Amino acid sequence: MKQTGLFLFTALAVLCAACRYAVCLMTVLSVTAFASCSGDITESDGTTEQPENPGTPEDPDNPDGQDGQDAPDTPSGESNILVAYFSWSGNTQRMAQQIVSQTGADLFRIEPVTLYPEDYTECTEVALAERDSDARPAISTAVDADAWSGYDIVFIGCPVWWHTAPMIINTFTESYDFTGKTVVPFCTYASTYRDETLARIVELTPGAEAHLDGLGLTSGRLNDGTNVENWLREIGMIK
Ligand SMILES: Cc1cc2nc3c(=O)[nH]c(=O)nc-3n(C[C@H](O)[C@H](O)[C@H](O)COP(=O)(O)O)c2cc1C
Image (cartoon, rainbow, N blue to C red):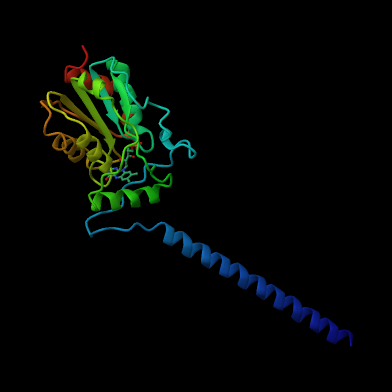
């Protein structure tokens, strides 16, 4: 009798252990499957490789201040130079601020009506879809017409997105008259398509009177403020 009881107890213990193992195995399998699905990028053609992940924005609640607190919605028009920029994770914003501190220019943040996802992969998916559909994402901020007419020089800056300028730059350049203005392109990037992006900003402003040589920096090179300073001196913006 004792032996039967011991056998039953052992059998039950083995059965329980097997069940726990099965549950654990199923959990591990489903988590792995989700992780690999969520990491995928929808590619429009065979030539688009996934852009390099620049890392998580410093403040996940407010990646690079997408709430627009970093630059006034309407620049004051006190300077004859405007620095207009779009930035998702803060690098281009830092570059714009360096230009402003060297030149005393007005600062204008190009802010999308619909904010881009804070998640990097989701943001790349939205950006790729916009590029491939030739979208014109709406801008919630604006330069006052009087102030605009007072600017002789307009810096336009953005990150490289999928080998080119984000589509919101098209929206911006199509919203203003560049006749008589000098345009200066700048961009930040992880590793590729810097020159193409600078050239794209020039291409998007055919009405400008002149274009000055642009500058593209990685976030590492941005840490050394002399890169921006030397460039501004080379193009005659500062002495
Ligand atoms: C949607 C998306 C696409 C990107 N595509 C490229 C690319 O084609 N080439 C590259 O060098 N970096 C690419 N990057 C990296 C950014 O250009 C780089 O991190 C940039 O400095 C970010 O600027 P921001 O902080 O002002 O948004 C991409 C980043 C994102 C979010």
